[in-house]
Length: 388
Image 1 (cartoon, rainbow, N blue to C red):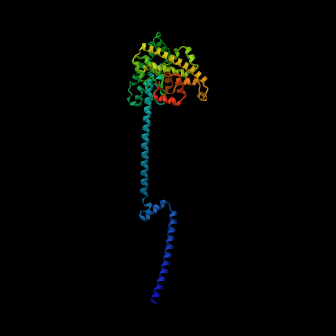
Image 2 (spheres, helix red, strand yellow):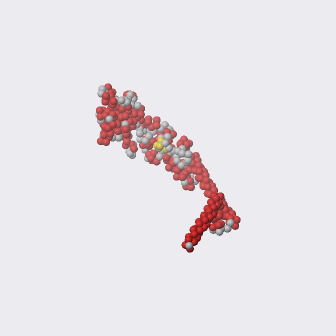
Image 3 (cartoon, one colour):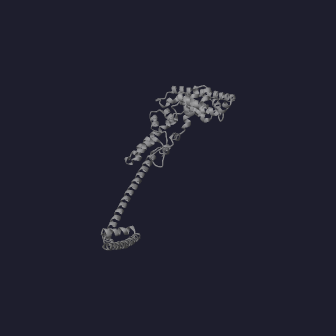
């Protein structure tokens, strides 16, 4: 009986414990739900304030509002001082730039006013909106260092620079007179006519461009002028290409015949090749050798005539070759290909190889070179088609 009583008591205790646990769980759930609802209603700042107050025991905001105001005031003042310092720096920087620009403007105006009127504007022509670069390189060499460092400008600097510029540009009058070239020598008279046409006045000299932003009045040209190498100075202005002299002195009948199969551009190209072959020494020759120049001029004319004669013969040969074409393969070669185009290809040639190959091989090989790409590349590989 005692055991039965104990069993009943245990069961009752278990039921009671279960009931109590259920009640606590319900209360806990309600608490959590309440806290979550409260949490959702609070902002992050409010949560931080509550954490500071409830957990860390921090005093309420009202008690340290004076500190907050003092801190905000100090921060604003620091920012204001920083802005003021930055503004002062910016103003100084702008003022410095304005002073520098004013100094360069005055310097340029002072130099310009002292340059001779006939070439004043051209001498100081700028290649940009700034004054840092000039179209004429030797003027850039003189002026550039002072414009980049205005502190180096002295009272007499404009006078000295203008004097140097004037002295050099005045010397060009002698160059343009062309009196150093003889009217009695075939080469010199042809060169004189060519240079007079190319440089009728000072503006033409200034317009002899090396690049789109500068002309050829640089230290090299100035060096030739100082050494009285007037012919070389003019050659330098023309980049040592005086080939138009060949066309100007070639018999008109010869040019008229060549124009049947070569356009103007191709004729000029042939003249350039002939000139380069016999006058490449002009770039390195130190002195003016009248006899050597005259001999080279005659050799150039002879070579130019030989080229035109061979092109004329090739034109006749191509006509016959076309007429003789009968098979499908032979006719296919002439599809979309004309005699004139093949002749102009010789003159203009890929990397000038077509021209050099034409001058050293017979017509049959030349024709194969122009119509068979595999053969052409093989000839290039073997070195039979050289640039020239």
